[in-house]
Length: 375
Image 1: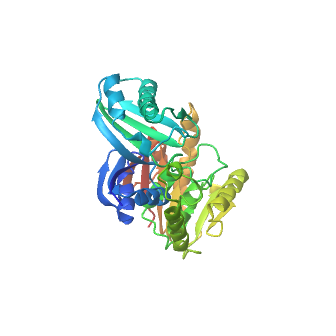
Image 2 (image 1 turned 90 degrees about the vertical axis):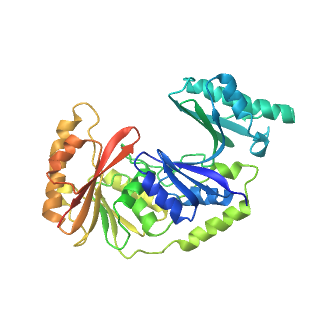
Image 3 (image 1 turned 90 degrees about the horizontal axis):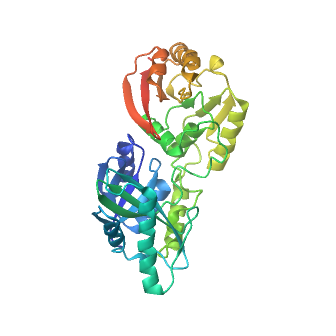
């Protein structure tokens, strides 16, 4: 099977974690870049990447790269791709575009011009053209135009990879599944000691921890864009799914726990855990931070408190951050604690010196993952 260039996108700050995932799956020529990791592999490797990567947002297959300063250069560059290999007139397409520091400044226009080049080529070949479906296309095309350099790729994921399929019910301001997985990975937790989240919300961090520790592929319960490509190998895909199910562990050596003061959040977390297939691996229970006690003498604690992004919220959250510090100092000896926050001022009210600070981005918001060693 021929080798392809593949690019896995991720949140800023997560590139190193994703690179370790790529290497762990045995991919070749792995290179970290800003916002993602580039590697080489076969179409089967592309399927496997979508199934197994925990911290990637999308898996892209670059098809063409060219200088682009004018609409005509864009149109001609897009037409160099043999689109009939990936699309027929009976199928639908959509074009996503992100651009920066380029002569072409309107993403909607760039997407439209790209679409025109694709459908014109197919109409010339078949006498008819595919339709556009922005919500649920058979083929999603990604255009990346930066400093007048254009890369045209296929989006093999379709729906972004953070949509695992288990989190239908959400609490307010949920953490993306991919970012939660990155936080767990960065904590260094390996599943052999307890992990607890005392403010778990919809349960994303404990669920991602359970999927990781139990070797469960995060993409088992969803569909992907590549499944609608003309070249899709259904038999090979079924083999990959069967392999993934065989690798999953039925139980774990240490407890994973999620706690939240709101009964509604706990119910949501339990529902999400059931859909993720980890309901026997994670225990969720209602518990106010005032009464929180970690379930063992030593382990890992991960907490993602509110950041206070709305006007006036920061002042009301200072006591909560102080309370988090008190709980860590008084009840969590032997634990390694990790606090993820988008508000550095509030983090000061924890009253503890962080032994490590990792910069991560939650969407456009610059955040810190802070490590506290509770000796």
